[in-house]
Length: 474
Image 1 (cartoon, rainbow, N blue to C red):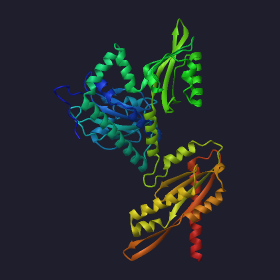
Image 2: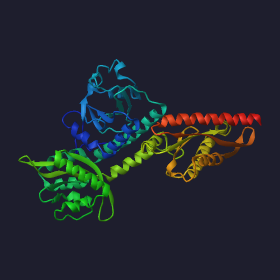
Image 3: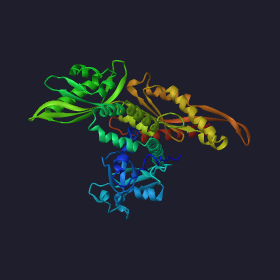
Image 4: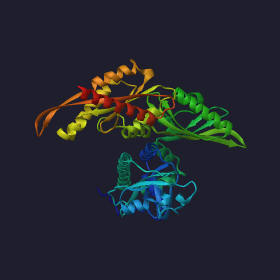
């Protein structure tokens, strides 16, 4: 795929000179912001970014810092792009090229870097686009093989998102058109309203003396309402769900009392019954030192919220079985209260290696999927069922939600997790049996997930030794 500019109508854009900041702004998107926020959370790092190199390093999206750009000479991504491969620097202070970099040399500077060049097929800037996805942290670290694979997946998604933005901007000449629009917004109210509609946002003002709220046309549209008279505060608040309304009223009261600006993501229900996620920002307007109003902006972020949820689910799902992966497991435990009683079960498949060796890995994958289906059917929600990796599975039981003792469910799993595999190898027809050894540990309040898994793992291998001893005695 190659994107060409219509040279008879528009001048090819560049990341050099005065137009760079405007052009980069066009390539930013809520979807890319959502992806970076998810990457930062997934890797538990200081920041995740996508940037393009031109005269400077320009950040298309970042979670963890607010820089728009920095000098090209200070960019660590220059090495990633120059080498055109995965770059991991566990401790930047020990790297001769970057140990004196101002972002590293600072007392509270960055210590870890991991980056991948973005694979973009475009001549949008009349030259190859130099772009990279990177993670940074404020402490030295390294990445496991699983984390490196996840890093590559995030990079691939980011590449497609940036490439899509480049295509859209290039095909329609949006750079010049939106540059003109931004210049005219200050002077033309009608274009301002159009911009609000395109961005699914609006502005508002609450008069504190009358409790009348002025809504721009964009806010009426977000509420699925026709443009009408200024509503009373009570009507404006009535669209929020109870929990969101309570949160907003607290933020507004604090703003008026302390002059504290606020920003929050909240939920509304429109008169047509549509549930929407909105982001509202507000701050106090003063006259002669007195608070007279609250003013702010309001934006429909439903699409971005749903995208974040989808990306989060994708990042926390094992692709072979559809079960939760390790990230999902950690999120499940993190979302439980400290005093909730949890029983952690670690399952390891016995006989699985023989299936792979004699019948092949495709048959092995079928066994993994069949065992996942059995687990899902035997352990009902709200308990967690996930694949730990390879031929290991994890079940986390919320004991207060169990309809039977955990030991009974343990025994039911031992009976259910038996699978007979029929096939052919070089010796002819063969039937192999795969079963599961299980180790269980009841996590005490304050136990970490890693501690619980370590004890369950020890119990699992004790169970394997008992089985072998019993088989030998027979």
